[in-house]
Amino acid sequence: MPDKILLIDTVHEIIPRELEKHGFEIVSGTEWSRNLILQKIHDFTGIIIRSRITVDKEIIDAAKKMKFIGRVGAGMESIDTEYCEKKGIICLNSPEGNKDAVGEHAIGMLLSLLNNLNKADKEVKSGLWLREANRGIELNNKTVGIIGYGNMGSSFAKKLSGFGCNIISYDKYKSDYSDGFTKEVSLEEIFENSDILSLHVPLTDETTYMVDEKFIEKFKKPFFLINTARGPVVKTSALVNGLKNKKVLGAGLDVVEYEEASFETSGKMTEDKDFKYLSGCDNVIMSPHIAGWTFESKIKLAEILVKKIINIKNKQYDK
Image (cartoon, rainbow, N blue to C red; front, side):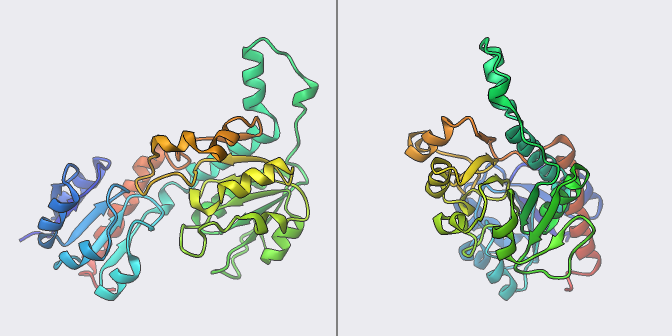
């Protein structure tokens, strides 16, 4: 009998097509409710998800034959990875697939902020021609601090390297990673030197509300903030206070703390007073969690995950 894989979310056609070529039986459960998944999960050796369902202990316990869980994307917060490890279930993701997309998106947000592009665009289209009011700031000779130097952080640094800026980075869980694009520093040096801060950390208990009032106060200079990581890494009320007191000069937010586990938002977001404040700021630009969403990354995310699954099968699921 072939190993059966359940697709819990819609994915690029590359995934079912290539996995079937390698002997897997693919079942689509994209319309299945959580209860139906719980009823049928015992029959599958693998599942592939994006963000629709949280794979918690209940689902893991019900998955008696489970050998691996694959996530099309980078973040793994929707999977109880620690419990999977105890159960001997391999967890896979494909952050290599959208690192270029995220890096480019972060660059775009930063350049837009520094050069008032969104603000100026609105003004010109409404008949205003305000040149001095939109004088920009050059990246050249600025210090860009990066927190989190994995696939996304390193991609951002590589793409920044041609701008003549000083790139420094801090990663609590890595060392000796300087690659010619960044200088590895302490968190204190990030606070001391950064003109710009870009966040590239996963969402964990440790990083939730990492950027709060105390964190922002530690910066020696006013700075621009870019967040293409996860919304809850930044406490919105703290960001608003930072913008009001000019400690934060501007923010590019691809993610917001109001997102649900599925990365969608409820209507309550627009009713929140802090969100309303951000919405009215010319020095804040936002996008709907699309930094990693390009036509190219959709293909690469699928191809990379497929290769990892096939590699596991070739090793007979042996770590």
